[in-house]
Image (cartoon, rainbow, N blue to C red; front, side, top):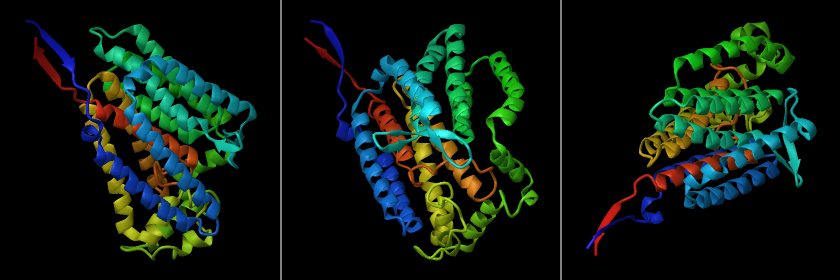
Length: 375
């Protein structure tokens, strides 16, 4: 007679995190409603967003069924694949009026590789962070590799002149450093290097319009009819919504074109003007709940790799929420980052649902019951 210990395969229907998934669906549904109002005269944008949402839901469900631990073996391939797309974008890609070059046409569809690169970076970084966290002594080699790959990812985004996305990478990186507890000497060296690189970034990475945005944020009165005008209109739109809003499709500022790119960068202005303070609070509370739920999943992960994977995704979502809403109300500089699950953008929608699929995969496997049997 002997004892055999085995893992019971979790029932996906019992362990699936319906709370997180339904919350994301509710936020996405509200986003579609708000977007339909923002692009009433451009139905093709709404149709494309609805299609991206359907594809995103399917992808998240598929990924949730796949064991996230399998990504460890593919992490380098995924990372270098994403960096390859970023490099290709620098050669044949297109950009926006601010001079960044971060879009590429694939089979007739415009794709922003940096959205997927964030997830690829999180997948690879989590491998090194697990080694650092679980080792008795901090492995210098893994720390250097983690920092090196982080610099490669951030460097590619800076070459694309996409400051907003670069800030997302930096925030994820700093969150990882704080959580894993890397020795302070590495942090000081890194901060020193960053400070030395600021003049280079200001002169060679940022163009005149982006520099003007930063200066206008510091001193709004310097250009009230130029760089500061859009933020002023956004704040006016949100304020005019008052408690209950002006109603669906009835926003004066957002419907008249006074607020630019109200379907993506400034979609929170549409929320504030048409749905009012109540609508804005609902969006914020749903976003906060998603973030807190992800933190709960990270804390209860069955291993360090799953925990870091969810932490990185949580940092990515949280920064985008804070920055998008913050720039809409004038408390943060304008960077063009989308509001997760709400702003128009098929690439971003798919990326966020891929991220949620990975979180659901970790959640699905966060507790495995051990069963002992005798024979």
